[in-house]
Length: 253
Ligand SMILES: O=C(CO)COP(=O)(O)O
Image 1: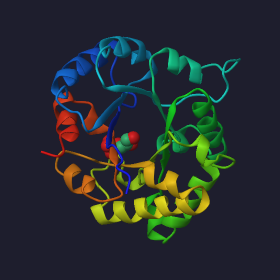
Image 2 (image 1 turned 120 degrees about the vertical axis):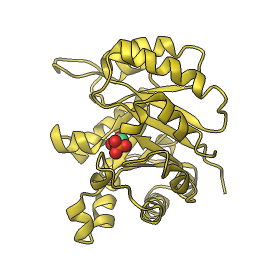
Image 3 (image 1 turned 90 degrees about the vertical axis):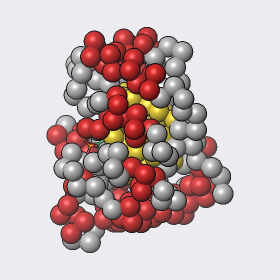
């Protein structure tokens, strides 16, 4: 079995000015300086990317964008191009977060366009999928996720997707304090990995990291990370405070 390097990623959403973000990563840098076998990433708002990149110089903490447009430039007021994220120092970009799907009209089609554009720009997409509470209660979890994965990766092949990271974030667990149980997370992650094995490539499925997101905190991270198909966490609220986020990065104890 290939070993997958765990990734603990902080999605700061619409929090922190440039100055606040720099203060946070300065603390975080020293708090996680001892960590070697876990990859750490933070995704600040666009306006904080450049100062945070500067503050992270010489550190192994990776930088990510929270969204981007699929075109490389043009008349798209309010949008950010993949190359702009790269130039700002990003290695990752979060794509298809449920908040973008819910509030900003993101669809499987735009998600697919964005994943393609990210890969072309050499950004590692963190491709978010997840079912709503109603969908879970109606027994539709797997069919919803299968559709999101298949549509999101449509037309892409194993050789294109080597850097892909998937994040399973059940919508009902985001910001609610209601975490999926470790068994629920494992069940979905194993299912998604099998789907990738069946529809894209077995080797990719084995090497690809699948993160769990939704109310991850220092009290539940260890149990989630102990599950064989959980390769990391995409953390919202608990990533904003450097001490708390550092505890998540040090989940091994
Ligand atoms: O949406 C999330 C990360 O992308 C999860 O948010 P919370 O950790 O605040 O539930």
